[in-house]
Amino acid sequence: MKKYLLAVQFDESTPESDEDLQAQMARTSRVTDEMRSAGSWVFVGGLLPSHATTVVRPGDGTTTMTDGPFAETKEQLGGFWVIQCDDLDQALAWADKCALACGSPIEVRPFQDAQWK
Image (cartoon, rainbow, N blue to C red; front, side, top):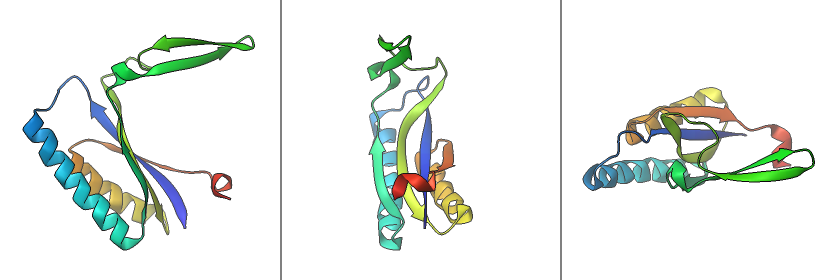
């Protein structure tokens, strides 16, 4: 089985109401439960907004730390699933369900095999 990252691309410029957020969480929980039942689920996590981030940058043998996201964009990483599937087609089928549940784009990225040995 191969492992994939399903990254939720969240638009922070359009905040959701508490009611909308609760409905989204209920939908994504159902997808996560379905993944667990199918044996595809590995890990899931939601992230705080990008203003809570700290970026650590290397340079000249030292690092600097700055507040805020790495890139100034409208869409930020809002959460993710790590799943295991037989192939990319199966991962894309899960991403389809996740996108509908979240109402946000999902980036699908395979992990390098060597990281799971």
